[in-house]
Length: 168
Image (cartoon, rainbow, N blue to C red; front, side):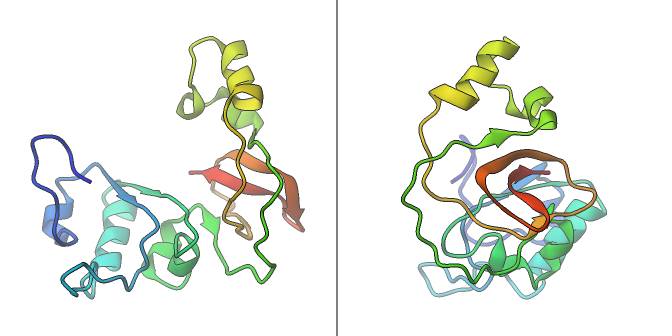
């Protein structure tokens, strides 16, 4: 994907070029993924450059979880340091058959990041009753101490509490 009026990227930006970006969005791409031409999506130091972009220069990073890689496959890469969750592989079987709706935390309910409607009551109702049911999520161990958890899985938890779904 790319912004209107800009050419799509054919490879991950160099450390110098990363400075042009406010936010990098990683979908469910494996750290060792290859493009259609067979070239690696990430060059050797790309994840270290992205970590530095986020941690040292204040760049944004949005990681969208997926069944193939994110964020679990990044748990042993330089990006693990800047993720808001500890994303270790979960050995439990992945059978998701029951519908559910995410639950906003107290912080999530008051966060502008989770605001879909200006009216607070209507916003809460959207999140709790109106949005479509979900059937899948990426299990992670826990949120890191400095993380802000905005939404959790309503029916599953572990020794650390409800499983975080949206965190920064």
